[in-house]
Structure formats: C-alpha cells, structure tokens
Amino acid sequence: MGLRVYIITRILLTIPTLLLLLTMVFLIMRVLPGDPVDLHFERKGTPEQIAQMRQILGLDKPLWNQYVDYLWGIADIGYLLRHEYPNLGKSMQVTSQDVGGQIFSVFPATLELAIYSMIIASVIGILLGTVSSKSYNSLRDHLIRGFGTITYAIPVFFLGIVFQLIFGVYLHWLPVSLRINPNVEPPAHVTGLYTFDSIFEGNMVKLVESLKALLLPSLTLGIILSGVFIRLTRTNMLETLRLDFVTAARARGLKESTVTYDYALRNAFLPILTMMGLQFAMLLGGAILTETTFTWPGLGSYIVGRINYRDYTAIQGAVVMFGLFVALVSLVVDVLYAYFDPRIRL
Amino acid sequence: MSENKIKSVLARCIPGLTSLAKKGPSGWMIIVGMVIVLGLVVMTAIGPWISPYNPSASNVGPSIAPPNSQFLMGTNVLGQDMLSRVLCGGSIMLQVAALSVLICFIMGVPIGLFSSYIGGFVDSVFSLVMDALYAFPGLVIAIAIAAMLGPGIINMSLSIAVVYIPTYFRIVRSQVLSIKELAYTEAARATGAKWHTILFRYIFPNVIPSIVVVTTINFADAVLTAAGLTFIGLGVSIDIPDWGLDLTKGRELLASGAWWVITFPGIMIILLALGFTFIGEGLSELQNPKLQR
Image (cartoon, rainbow over all chains, first blue to last red; front, side, top):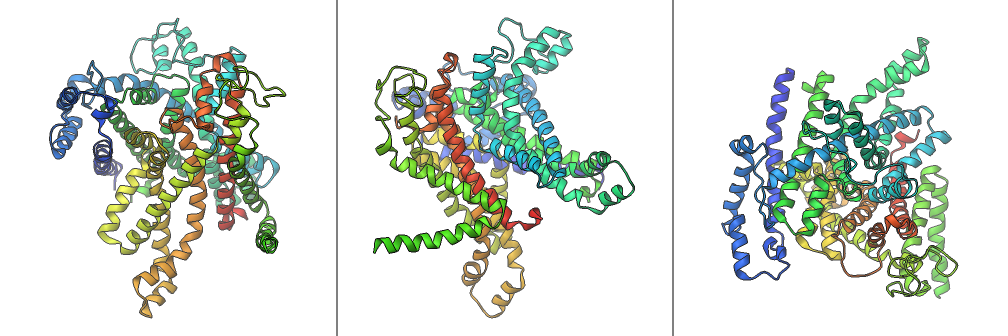
C-alpha cells in the first residue's frame, strides 16, 4: 500500500471513531440524570423561562431529532466556511453567542501550551530515559526512575501552585498568570500562538514577554508528563540496547555515544513517538488543570468557567473540541509512523 | 483468644513481608507502598480522635498563622487548625477512590471476560466503544459527567469510574484472548467442561495478576482525578475537611505567600498517590521478569 492510500484509509477510519465520540458526548449530556436547563437556572427557573430556553436550544424536540441536528450542525461545511468555526450550537448565557466561535478564539492558547509542554516533556523524558537505560540498575538509574514515579503522583495543579509560590510570589521572577504581560499589547492575530505571532511581527519584546508567561505553565505540565516519557524511553532503550545490531556496532569499535544515540535511540524512537501520541490525551487533561492554575485563557479555563455558569452547550462543545483534537493528533502520529516505517503500511 | 488470633494473623503477614523483601527493589517498593497507604488509612480513621482541634471549627486560632508550637501546620484563613484538617482530610478522597475502583472492577472485568470469550460482533462493538473512550482525555469525560451529575461522593466516583473501565476491559480482553487459545483451555473444552467453568475456573484465575496491577495503579489515578475534580469545583461541596478542598482554597491565599495552607494537604495527596503507585509498579515488575534481568 502506498503512503497516499494509507493516509486516505486512515482518515476514513477516523470518521466512525469521531461519530462514536460525538454520540457518547451527546448521550452524556442528554441521557444522564440532571436536566441541563433546570440545572442552569439552579432549579429556580420559572416554567416559562425553562420552556423558552428549551426552545432556543432545541431541547423541546425529540431526542433523535436533536441528535441529527447536532451531528448535522458539526458536519455543516457551509457554516464552517462562513464563520471559520464549526457549528457547535449557542451558548446558554444570556448573550447566546456561538459556542464554536468562543472555542476557536481560546483554542490557540491551549495549543501553544500543549506544544511547549510536549517539547519540555520530550526533552526531559528522552534524555533522562536514555541516561537511565545506559546506567541500568545503578544509583543514577534508580534516582531517575524515582523522579519519574514521583512526577506521576504529583497533582499537576499542586506543582503549578508551588512554582507560582516560588518563582512568582517569593522571587518575583516570572508572571504567574495570563499569556502575556497585561501592559503589552498581544501580537497581531496570525496563528493565535503568541510566540509565533511575535516572531511574524518581528517584535522581540512581545516574544520575550509571551515566553516568560509560557515558561511556568509549560514547565509544570511538561514535568508532570515527563515521568511517563522517561519510562517509555527507558523500557524501549533497554530492549533495543540488547539487540544484535547494537552489539555489532560496538564490536566495530564505534564510540559508545554514537552507538547509543545514532544507533539505539534512533531505532527506539518510533515506538516512543507512537506512545507520545497516545499520551497526548493525558496532556490535554493536565492542560485543563494547568490552565485553571495559571488563569491561562485556553479551552481548559473556558470549560471550567462554563461549569460555574452551568452552560451545558458550551461544555458539550468544548468536550467535542478536545475529542477532535485528540483524533487529529493520533491521525498525524499514525501517518508519521507510516512515513518513517514502511512496514506499517503493509 | 484474641491474642492468639492476632498472633496467627501476624504470622500469616510477616512471612509474606519477608519473602517480599527477599525479592529485591520491587519487593521493597511494594512494602513501602503498603506502609504508606495503610498509614494514611489508619491516620484518617483515627484522625477525629487524635487531632488537637476540631478540624471544622473556625477561629480556633488567628487567621493565616504560620506554623508554630501551638499550630504545628499553621492555620488557614478561617483560623482552622491545618494539622487537624490534614489528619482528618483523607476520608472523602479514600472513599471516592475505593468506590470508583470498585465500580470499575464490577463493570470492566465481567464485560472484558464475556466480550472476549464470546467474540464476534458483540466483542467488536464493545471494543470499539471502549477504545474510543480510552483514547479520549479522561479528565474531560470525568468533568462532563461530574458536571451533569452534580456534587457528591457517589457521583464523583461514577464519573471517575467511567474513565477507567476501558483500562480494565482492555487488559482483561487481551489476557483472555491469549489464554483462550492455550492448550489447557482447549483440553478443558475437550473434556466437555461448560463455558462458565472454562471462563471462571480456567481463564479468570490467570487474569487476576494483571487485574491487581491495574487496580493499584487505578487507585492512584482515582486519587489524582478526585483531587483534580475538586480543584475545578466539582468535588463534594459540603464542608468536610478534605485535602483536595484545602489545597483549592489555599490557592486563593497564594499572593500572601502562605505556603503552609497549600503544602501540607498537597503532600498528603502526593503520598497517597505515591503509595498506590509504588505498590502497582512493584507488582508489575515482579510479574514481568523480562524487565528485571
């Protein structure tokens, strides 16, 4: 199978998964006990208010009808092209804004946090994991593994709060909230990622300010995630270092660092990459808590804020968006894997 | 009588511990993990009797007092004694963790057993649903469900359980699929054993070890997810001392630099999660001699 055929098949296979996901989200929001509209008014709404809200949201229609409307809305390409965001329904707030629009305006913040956290987690994870596997069963190995285990047990928001306390409150080195210093105008919107947009604008001040704001949140999330990456790298490296081609490379008198990094790590890298793709869902979960801790105006803060207003259409939209994001990342990882390792296409 | 009973119980436990200790680092990890978890359970159980102040009483001391000889862990903004709150604060988290693990176990294991044993269409449908759920960010699902169900210990446990049922399903399924094809299962089938005999007497006992590992790891995850749900305001809303709640409230005092209202509850959550993680990692290494070498 050629790469193109593989990519097309893989994209087609994503559709049933997405459909299943959308259905689950729909069922969670409609079938579980607890009437969204009633809860929205904190059980104090008058029958008229409730009836009106139900009508606005289309909740007065039969369930299957709502389901079709909901799926049809998301699949409506025309709407997507007109508004540049998918139709995820109206917010339950008085202003009744489009949930899709709200979500797309906060999404870049989450994406930026995710990218930098992933970079930090990968660098820490792959480096420490490799070192750990090289010094197998030594004190260094045990210390690194201990670090990995502890990062797994720390609640991400606790680490965030500790960082805020040390670097923000005590040392005053770094900002503890928001994406950029409030006294600095955010860069013009191109990608929505402040660091990239600052570079496009050629504005160093904005770049430095946005990097400073990013440092603590992405370090928090990156460190929490690095534990899993350390373990993955270590296990894969231990297996690879035992293979014959590594022994052969050593026998040819190659330097140990060449053997480790150019031979073993390169071969262990693909399974690590796949595993990292799988961890992306975990990263997004952590991102919600990190964003809440650092009042980072992304999708996580959005969903938490909407919970307080009992805005169920918004929660539903945000959950769908998280799902789409994960599906997209796993698609990209699979395609990358197929590109690097032709065997997978067979 | 009771003394003999205690002795016999101890005798049964101690050889277990010594044989664990002989198994090297992974054995020790299990022991340390068990000591931490048991210690925290006992502490929470006797907390109300040993805590120096009533953990829920406000103004037993000054507001936001740093740790001192009278209040060893300081006081929070309401003038509540942090030490007393730390001693009593584990109960909700332990209950939620235990209940959600129980729900996962009751749902995930039987579904995994039957689905993979029956195979065919049923298995495909279950696998598809479970895989989709598994791939989804767990905390996001837990948040959506918890937001719908509202606060409360049972609702919180349910929303956490939904996230981890696929983990049980998948591990049970993968084990059954390989065991189903082994010669001894086939031999049992050849002797005319009924399907439930094969499933419960021949296959299930061999799945248990992997379930135990998943369960302990699940405990750690459940603790952390419960803390996370509490942090974003979906916890148990009544004012019972709770590490997650104290940590969340302590965050509001961040600007004042009051480290003690945050640090102590946070460390307790870490300890609890760490204890379960140690047990889980130790067990999985004992079962996987390949990684030990």
